[in-house]
Amino acid sequence: MENVGDPSRPNWAIVLHAGAGNFSRDQLQESGEPHRAALMMALKRGRRILQSEQGTSLTAVEIVVRALEDCPWFNAGRGSVFTHEGLHELDASIMDGRTLACGAVANTRVAQHPITLARRVMEQTPHVMLAGAGADAFAAGSRVRLVPNSYFSTPYRRRQWEDALSSTSDKFGTVGCVALDRHGNLAAGTSTGGLTNKRPGRVGDSPIIGAGTYANNRTCGISASGIGEQFIRHAVAAQISAMIEFGGRSLHQAAHLLLDKRLPQRAGGVIGIDPRGNILCHYTTSGMYRGWADSTGRLQTKIWD
Ligand code: ASP
View 1: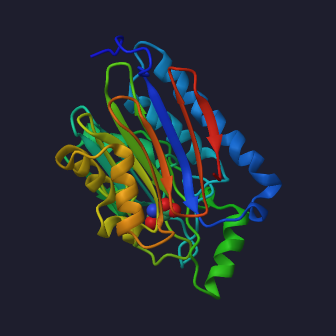
View 2: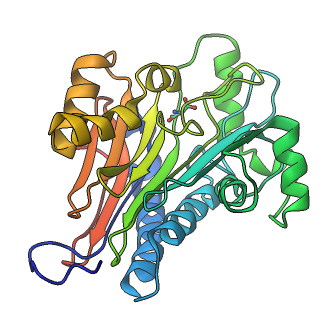
């Protein structure tokens, strides 16, 4: 149903993140300007889709996440962190809030755009998640772009991994997007390289529907970033949705309750949109790369408060 009645209510909205983390301004080269420019470029791609009559939230989410996967600054696609063995194993998921259809891949080593592979799992298989060698075999047969594993490497991530080999690391980062289209449909997607120096085979929350990603037209769309084990334990994305549906909470109340009262301190952040177009960004880390836009003309990116 198209929203034309209430002028204060946006008829489309989009929010993206490129990771919540405990980083300081000094750690970001040139005060984060290249990061902010990349966020804005991705946001405008999503906006263009949602402005058009036929644009769907699902496609906006996929296109935005692909743009962020291509950006070497963020921990997803090119620029993903290294595993303990010095490789890259990527996770992603996508969900359609209209139908609750969803797709996910875990530990793919060859898909240039894991989010697109996740969408193929959703649309071309009867399954929800494919992992490891099975995901890569499916990638080879489903006409997504394949790359050698070294494509994902960047000098910055290699240095981060080498430092992490001699100490424990809490370096993380992920990208994600939530969108509401003119037809009232919500979608959400998340893509990540996971945690620096992770054990090969480790799977975080990003490809787990209900933990790192969730979308339901009745409640909200959510994409998370942070310490995946905590987000899985607390089923963060699904719990936020359930608190709205069964607990009478708003999106903001639900996200604040869960992140502030249930998760350990500085565990991460979430972005979300509810069916009325209210946009949420909430994090308990020092910062979160994020941006949002809607049909009322809002268009903004931020890293810190
Ligand atoms: N949640 C991701 C994971 O644990 C990492 C992140 O969001 O930074 O794999």
